[in-house]
Image (cartoon, rainbow, N blue to C red):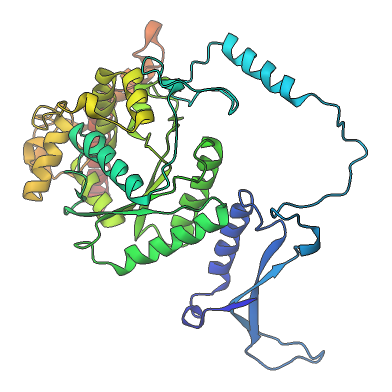
Length: 434
């Protein structure tokens, strides 16, 4: 099969094709068939005269050729490969006993399943005991409308009411400027099919006005539901091309999964951390955000401050209750719980920013604000402040402020203040040298 892209011929430069094929190579590592029995090669046409050996001296790419090496005669009725008998395969292995032994060892290690989905095998009966969140069923409804409504309830309570996303007003409004949230359910299970659905959604976002489609939640309830590792590997293949293919100017991605675990090495890392529930959703999801809105939000609030306040909020609810509600797809237990955005620094700034479109001076000036945003500031905002001293104090604490004069990390506000002061000092040095 040959796929031609006549409107992209000018973009198919050697550099772009190198980046594109590099992305394909990464995708091969997670795909079921692509790279195994299906390959993609550039399709070129001559653009210049032939040389003395009759070969074309120059050519250009106008598309790709898809080649499949799958032999339909080697497939079973259910689409699986029918391999020749392996003389080294031990058919006497007692796999049932092995599964039971693994489950027994996991139970002895104290894996209660909180935050990780549990280790119970499919053969085990699952009770509906609210006191043990790991024992609750993790079913996937057949009705897409039910998937959507459950997702909307999760957004309304977790993202909006608890303020996990400072720029989400409710299940239907989010972003900067505030606009509609678009929900799409896709039942794909194979990597290749999810790639196809995702890129079609990217095109939809690009072609839609942000007043009609502000942010998108692309929901894949049947994809990697019980395999967070595969989902993370797949997610990495989507973030990689954002910069290399020039897509980052259009969109940014945030991923959600029922078993998501932060792995940044900070205090919020680890299976049992309540902070994980900021990214744990009823089903695997891809949140497609518009880059211009992300940048507008970042101008108002430092990301670290949002993380800190989210962790505080989620800790108050507790991991057991958060996991139980997630498994039951029911957040009525905290129906009355709603954070006061005026009482929390990051949410207050976000609320003011949404309403006025600007960040107040007292929220940008490190003299007045205990949690300043890492924004550009002019001299009038920090007149009389010794920026060099701020940087030196931050370095002193970072390198010598720990126990026995050892290394110590800076808090979020201290990091923001140090970054702001560093930017100012560097800018001032440029002016002096110029």
